[in-house]
Image (cartoon, rainbow, N blue to C red):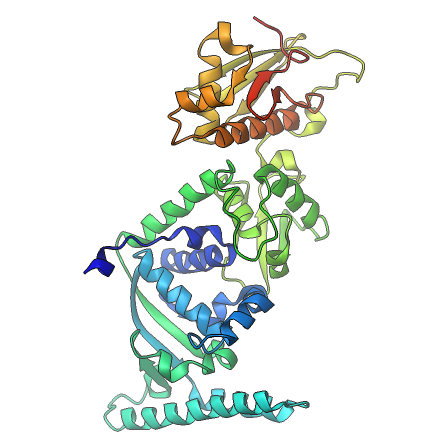
Length: 416
C-alpha cells in the first residue's frame, strides 16, 4: 500500500529532450485520433545509443538493449502521467522479421563471438514466438485480420518474450493505448507549464543527463538561430534534422515547443522520420522575430555618439513595458512569464523607489521567498534586459545587475 501512495516524480519526462519528444509524439497521435505506435517512432536521431547509456545497460540485467529501455520508458511514461492504459504490446509480421535477422546475420562481415551470440538470441526469441503463435492459431477463427500474423502480449508479460528482439526489430514491435478522458489533456497542460518555467530559466540548475551544461534560454534562442542558418528556407518552411538533438548550444525540443506555444512556428509532425518540417510564421528569422519583438532594422537609429534617454512605465494588467525616448517614440515590450511580471510589479509599484538600488533578497521576500528566490529574481531581470536590447540595440543593460542587487541604469533612464 505504501508504494501505491508514493508520489511519482515526472519532472524528467519534461526536462529531458528525448523524453519530451516521446510525449509530444504520443499526444500528437491522441489529438489526431490514432492510438497505435511502433517502437521505432521513439528512436529519433539515434540519440539513445550514446555510449554512456549503452554501457550502463550492458552492466545490468534490467534491459536487453537500448531499444528495450526506450520501450519500457515510454510505457512507464504513459502510466505515470495517466495518459492511458496499454491494451497490448505486439510483434507483427514474424516472417519478415525472421528474414531481416537472417539477412543481417549473413551480411555481417566481421562477426565477433558476442555478435554470434546476439544473433542466436534473436533467432531463439523468434522461434519461441512462432511456437506461441502456432498455438494461438489453433483457436483463431478469423483468418482475415492483422491478428493472424501478429502475436500479442500484455504489459505484464511482454518483456520476457521480446527482450532482445527490440534491438533489431523495433519497427515490428507495436503497442496500443486506450487513452483516458482527461489524462492526455492534463499532460499537454503540464508541458505548457514546464515550458513557461523553462523559458524563464527556472530550471537552470536542473541540467538534463548527458548534457554538458545548462544554458540561459535567451542564449539558447541565439544559438538556435545561428544553427538553422545552414538549412534552406523555402516559402517559410525549413527541414531541421534529428541530429539537432545532439547540439549542446540549445535543447531543440524545448526550443521548438516554446516557439510553437508562442505561435512563432508550427512543427508539421513531431513523428516525422529523419527530420522535422517546420513552418516559421514571421520572416526573416531572427532572434527578435522568435521572441516576438520588432525587427532590429526598425528600431532606434540613434548615432553611437548620441545619448539615449528613456521614460519607463509598466502595466501589470497588460504585462507591457512602455519605453519612450526623448523624441516621443514608444517601444512596447510584452513581458512573458509570471516571475518577470511580478518582479517588475514590485519595482514599479511605488515610483519614488523605482530608480533606487534594489536588493534581490528584498524583491524575493516581497514575492514570497520560498516561491521566488534571489536567483529567480536575478534571472527574470537578466532576461528582461535581453528583451530590451532586442528592441533597442543601443541599450546594453537597462538594469545594472550585481550578485545581490539591481538598479535601473542612470545612463538610459530619465527619472520621472
